[in-house]
Image (cartoon, rainbow, N blue to C red; front, side):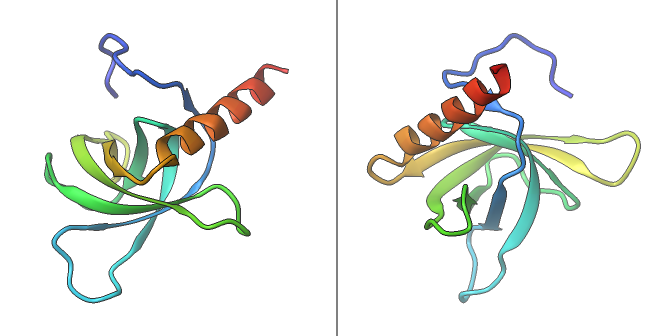
Length: 120
């Protein structure tokens, strides 16, 4: 796992969120995969995946914080992939590229809320 200097602009929280993605280009309405998130912030996320994704690949993302609210829809770019030594899974680092109006701020507020709850 990456152990370099912290360069993130936004806080991240280690919490399970429902994230779905599909790699571009895609055809038709299907093709969404659901992945377990390692951590998430307003700038990007880490997740586990069992297939190789090319660095630089673009993906459509749907991030759900609640089953009753609409997901945050955005575009992410694969920054890096790291193969896990103990199994066939990879850790994927994604940078959020395109987010609609107020979506980055919404993600940042949710992360801050969970982060402050974990300090209590």
